[in-house]
Length: 136
Length: 83
Image (cartoon, rainbow over all chains, first blue to last red; front, side, top):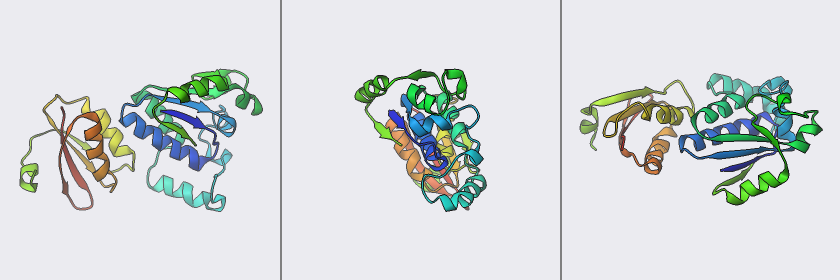
């Protein structure tokens, strides 16, 4: 699977976390390219701090959404990504330009889940080879 | 398998995923399958409706044998045999 992760919103990141968990359960190899808004969420000072993340849809329902996740004992998006990485081959690449937009210059500026910084060529090469392509 | 046959199975590993929401039960099954031998039976306990469909499909994909599902009080017992 090749996942183009554009979003930096808590609802879509949670969805992405669940999807790659499903991929992990199926022993899929997952290549994630973190683009634009996503790079912000991967910054060390953001991560799964929900107070620093917005909703992509129904922003007025954020409190209800977060409360429901807590009641249903749903993991945070970072926890989903971390668990998927432990179970199967998941590589997370931060788009260099996207990182710079949010003040991230080197890999240490991002949470430890990120493997490297890459360019658009890497994303498209991976997308060309993948059997499943997603863009969230 | 019939309900009676399922109840009579010797279960090598019981995975209690009733406290977790999707994709929890599937991930717990994935982690636990490595702990049993081929030919052994595993049961997954889940209160999540989706697990009833997820586990059989996962079995097909991974090559394990889905044996059947029993309904408990507010949860499901899903049986499979590792290939």
